[in-house]
Length: 110
Image 1: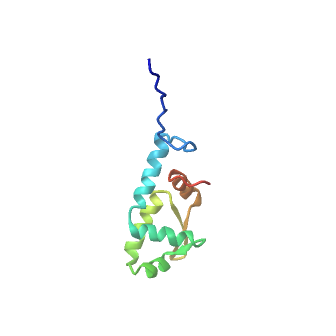
Image 2: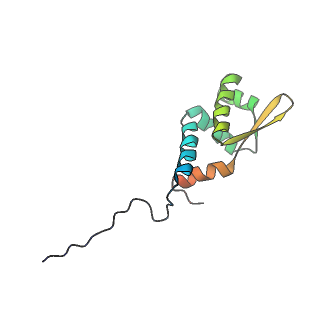
């Protein structure tokens, strides 16, 4: 009788932790928020600065203030950015602790 060696199936990388459903849902919400080129561009700008005034984002993307505010609201609701108000201006900053799980989900090391 011939014996065949069984090779175990590998479903994940050896160092890739399995996500629980709550973490997977949170990541999916954040990836959906990033599924727009303008929002990716906003996150890119925010990643390069401690904080950015919404007026600067409006000028950088040549979009109306309500349109930029709409994109920022989606990013804020996804937990990727936070806002600080100073007088009539709003300043946004990227939350590094929110971006790190996205990096890890894509296989980047810490």
